[in-house]
Length: 265
Image (cartoon, rainbow, N blue to C red; front, side):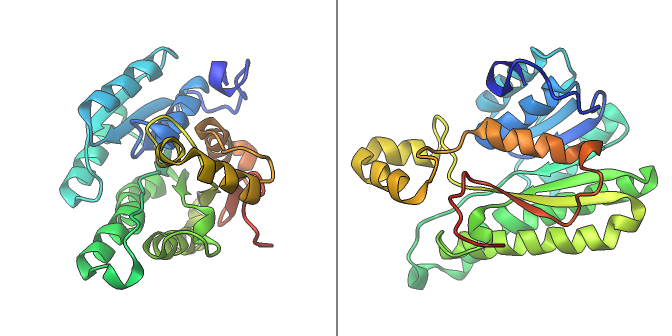
């Protein structure tokens, strides 16, 4: 898909599908939006920072598709509603929702306050539930729709921080429950579980700059492919899952991690 994604698009018949992507101003979210743009989809993206969101919007526009950007923090109910309402007003339908927003902190377990637990659960779990709750009635009316959660391999096994692990595990479980509940209405819900993904300005890029020897050891010991993943590699799987080529795939959680995960399931 393009220079980042390959020389040719996948031809996944996503032309004119309306796709919402949360947290799409950089990193994985931006790569996902660009992947859909390459396939001819119409985009609605949100982010919290005007400058990075505008840059993402301009890059998406180079693919000749429509894109609507909304400055919104989807951990806040009213801002999530504005993002949804803006999308509906612009396009009149919503075919795909990608819940990409998430993040972690490294507070030691016994020092995590109730407030921090609530903040990280809201960021990684409740925001996805909130956005899904907004779009599902529209998808029910259309008798079709796709929702994709960007979770983590650490939602499937130990290894990440306790709050992140707990929230991402719950997100995967929520996706499975939604998939079973709404399958009869032709609404598919899946999760994608990235491994460690590096991009400029991201956590792994910062850690690599701060302690290159430690990160080199981590890559050698934990990553069979010998490298970090790229945001585009996550995007390729997400775009496929949103297409009719994945019409039987619902309730699944797909690792995209270069075999970083040690889990058998």
